[in-house]
Image 1 (cartoon, one colour):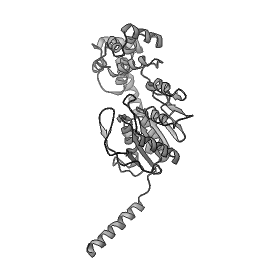
Image 2 (spheres, rainbow, N blue to C red):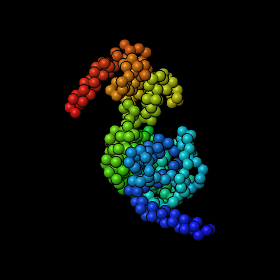
Image 3 (cartoon, helix red, strand yellow):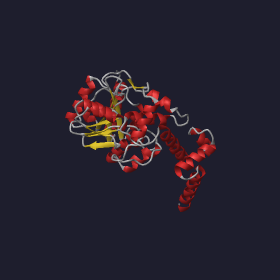
Image 4 (cartoon, rainbow, N blue to C red):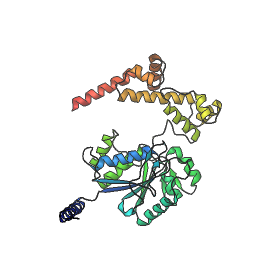
Length: 351
C-alpha cells in the first residue's frame, strides 16, 4: 500500500468511527424470530409500523427504531402464504434489543422453530429481554416453557387449540394484546399494528405512533384491553366460528350453506342446529346480516353507488337489497348515505 493509500484508508476509518459515535442509538430496538410458515401480515404490519416511526416522512431510515430478522441459518424463511423473507443477521446478543418478537404461523405445519431458536429464547429470558409472541407466537413461547403463571393472549380462533395443548395455562381470547411485564402476547391480525404503536408510544412518543398508523390508513391505536373483533356473534363452537369466517370471506359471491357444511365435514342439518344452539339464528340469517353489515360500512365510507354495493355484497338486484337493508336497520341505503353526507357537511362547516 502506498503512503497516499494508507493516509486515505486512515482518514476513511476515522470518518467511519466518528459517524458511528455521532449516530445515536435507536430508542426502540426490535429483533424478530420468524416461525416456520409464519404469518406474513403479522410480521409486515409490525415492521411497517416501526419503519414509519423510525424516520421523518417516508424515508425509512432506522434512526428512532431499528429492526433485525434473525435466524440461525442463511436460508430464506418461508411464510404460510409461500412468500419467503431473508434474515438480516444470525442469533446475535439479546442485549442488542429491547424486544425479541416471535411471529407464529400455522399450527399444523410441523415444528414452528428449531432447537437453536428455542435455546436463543432461553438466552433472551436469562438476559431479561422482553419476549413478545404475536399470532401463534404465544404457542411458541408456551412450548418453550416461558409463559408459566402468565395470562396468554390468543386469537379467539385458536383459543380452543391453546386450551387443549396447555390445560395448565390461562388463555385470554378477548383482548387485543396483553402486556405482562417482560412478556407480551398479541392475538395477531390488525392488533399487531396496535401493539407496535403501543411500544412506539412507550419508547418514542404518541405523535410518532399516531403518524405510523395514519400513514397505514388505520385508526388511532386501540388499547390492549379492547376486545378482539369477532366474526358476527362470538360462539363457543369452533365449527360455527369457522363457518362465519367462510361467510366473511365470501360476501360478494355467497357460498350455499350446504357447501359451508361440507367444508366443515357436517351435514346441512347439523350446521343449522349448531347455529341455532349457539347463536339463536339460522346460518342463512347470520350470513345475510354479515353481508348487510358490510354493505352499511361501504355506504358510510365509500362513494360507490347503492347498486354497486348491492352487487358487491351478493344481492341479485337493488330492490331486494334495499328491502333487506331497511328490514335489518330500519332505514334505507339512501337514508344512510344521506346521513353521512349531512354529517360531513356539518363537520366541514364547523371547521
